[in-house]
Length: 453
Image (cartoon, rainbow, N blue to C red; front, side, top):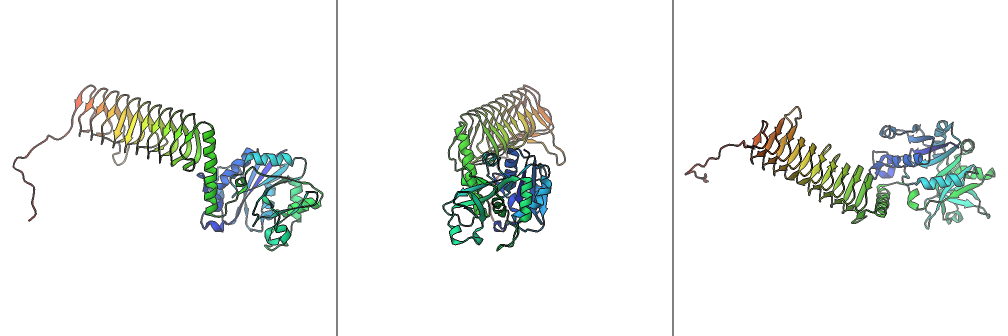
């Protein structure tokens, strides 16, 4: 059996009150629709088709790298009509699964169960049972429990509104039978739309058993209609992600105060303090500690490293046992070696710093190569930009850079060299020597401060 997935993403999202299409609003740092595409890929879809709305060209533009076909629903005539627009793209599949671009947390396991349970019949339907079913289409069954139809709330009688089993909208069906049923759907309803849900009644009338399954959690099938619902799903998703990390051996100070906006991989005995934000691909080695209020993005933190409070690490590597922060910033291509110290208000960009070196205070290191055992004093900067081009600074092993030094690149400091505090070094400094470049101190005797007249 080959499976095709149709994702309906043509809704206006009026309640979001945004110029951005609803399905592009982010959850955990990624568009809602991207989460649904992931689920479609996880169930082994041979074809994926996304139906977007008129004027929603931002959707195919934003997800141009996705392995799917985009089809425009120029006239919004209902969900049944939307699926019809996608069926030509499903011509070579046996079975179709219909998902929704604003239902981002559906689990592949749930979908696989629905597909497997309905494998012997032409139609499967995902339902859920709610204490308060207001607003949802009700599942109407006969006396034997067989599904007969779905009735939307606006079209339901008082007895039908009392039903607590409701429709999630997610169905799977044989492609040929689905096409036949959709061709028979009419718009004789309050909204004058072609409902996909009417397929259920047509299938039952044809003697087809409609097999149902339910998700493990209601959040799996929760849709996003406004920003409040989006925020609620965000916190649910983050809590679930935190729980997975903790079960695998990560300590999290407060699971309610962590945001994973990408993929975080932690080895055992990692400790994460409050208000951590992780973006992109982040890996943290065994025994590392991440302090409060840190941002980690596309970075690799080595085993037993410590990142202190309020530090930002982006596109960087931090070696084992290194100590970063507080208030440090590592920018892309910063490579911090084993047991290094990068201290408060230090910024490192496109620089390699070898094992055991220290840049502890108020410094900028950019476009540089620093050897092992180097000590860089407070207030040191590498002057790497001449207004047009970047230049490199090289500091060899064991050098000592005095406080408030400016290293004007391109420049090299030899192994074991010492640079006197307050120097402006614009020429190479030889190894094992003291280099000082600063104005001679002068005291003017008898000088008096100006006084107000």
